[in-house]
Image (cartoon, rainbow, N blue to C red; front, top):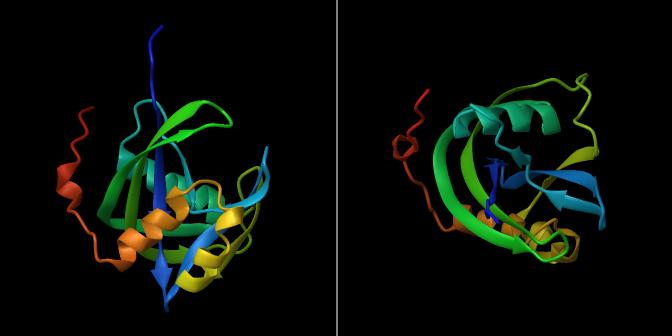
Length: 148
């Protein structure tokens, strides 16, 4: 058997002291996550985080730094995720855009609101990525190389 982690990307977007999260319908109920999703075949990590942020939040996103790379095993699905978390800035918002299937709404939450809502996080990576952002972790995007 060949083991393969599920590669995902996430956007950690802070604005005026609050972070953009999505509330999404999951098998475990309605939970909070960052705008995030799976890397598509032949897609760069940067293109994936831009696409996923647009689809899930209706915000166009410009990645500026890598915050970290995280490995997490989800016991409910027996899936191992390899998450690339990016920070950057929003360029525009299209409130008329329909959000991706399963996304209930977007919310802006303070770090304290995120900490107190841990029981409703899709994974422990939600809070960990925010804490890493708050601690100043930033890595240059040049670390990532995408060959066509």
